Image (cartoon, rainbow, N blue to C red; front, top):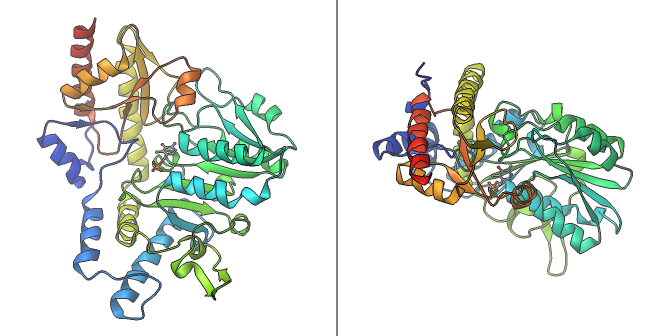
Length: 401
Ligand SMILES: *Cc1c(COP(=O)(O)O)cnc(C)c1O
């Protein structure tokens, strides 16, 4: 079976890489973009740039309308109750840093923040640093052997001392769905806030923040087939009201004199200065493109590719998968082969995969691994990409052994 992607030709970047002999298997790091997004990005500039939320003139009004339409599309994509619950940031990392700063006054010494052992640095370090500043305890939920947060242990760690739970929906190393709904329910029962790192989860068919029941949800445009430089932060209305303002200037101000100022509520109160106007507008085009696809077909295609990836890896001697991935990616090591050497040989053969600690150094350390290779898939990948990967892998392993 060829496993062709009917969407591959919508992505000029993939076509260009094809022409260069490059096989792109690193979509968990950043995704290629559909032509519709490129058209939108160029179209904004080509039709006359203008700042948003300021000017009365026609170009300004047009830019503001398109910018706010994107906010509406994001709200719809995430199934937020209102577009007022969507703040544009620079990325998942900035969204999570905003939260760790903005929620700081709610914490008192001795309070606990609960995270898991698999967190990306972006959903670990802001909380770790907040804990250090405030004398809080950072509690780490352990994983089971599949790479899933152990719910039974989590239930004993989430306690009346827990003030906040921060957890990834889908690990960028382990490719496994986490029991986020159950964890959020445990946190809520203790009156704790919940934050979900949706940077990977949002890509694979589960993006309903109301169904999750979280207070905050963070993700990035560039992994969602949109432009880089834009992050999304969803906050439930009542949760957003607890955030203190963090960056000051521009139109986030309601009223200012020399000694004092008052600020807008979310979302505009958390978007100081000129935002990434073109990128926010173009993200709207990416979401329109995604919304226009047959979602079941996309999920089915990704699942078939993923199954072929796992089958190919497990058919080869000495390959150790990390955990039991369920979707989109697989990380692995090879017995007696350094992953940096393997990555080098794959790179030389035009295979673009990721090697290293995947911004989850504590996780790799806890598994006793200096690094791992990660293959990750986008909706434009096809069976031929995997064939080229396996041919290159076999050649590399032959050389290294
Ligand atoms: C990529 C990623 C992040 C960070 O996203 P940025 O766009 O680099 O800010 C956070 N968490 C997970 C799970 C990721 O995959």
